[in-house]
Length: 108
Image (tube, rainbow, N blue to C red; front, side, top):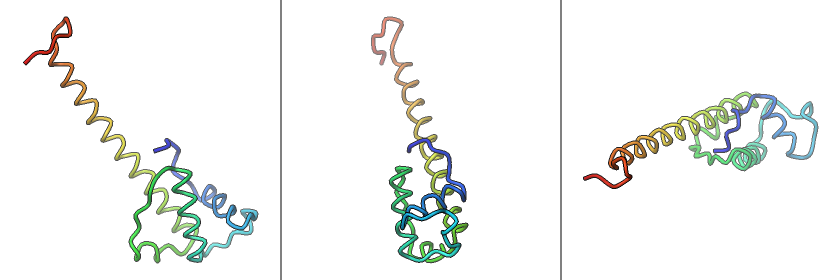
């Protein structure tokens, strides 16, 4: 993950404004499927997170606020996953370190 903060509504509007090169004020509250597809691709590229949305979840995203909620959840979930992986790696390193003696020789 890129370490970026979860997007807020303003950031989602900026991403959507890139679709059609328009001002954020010109972005409508309701999202069409093409606009949403473009937003998801833009989000995945920007945040290096692949969204795996069911058809039902995709169809439930109808507004900028809906999209903001889904994208924020994805970033927070990715951050939680990477934190868990980091602590697992740290646990593994600690365990490996405990298997060496003061000279660095491996212990059984």
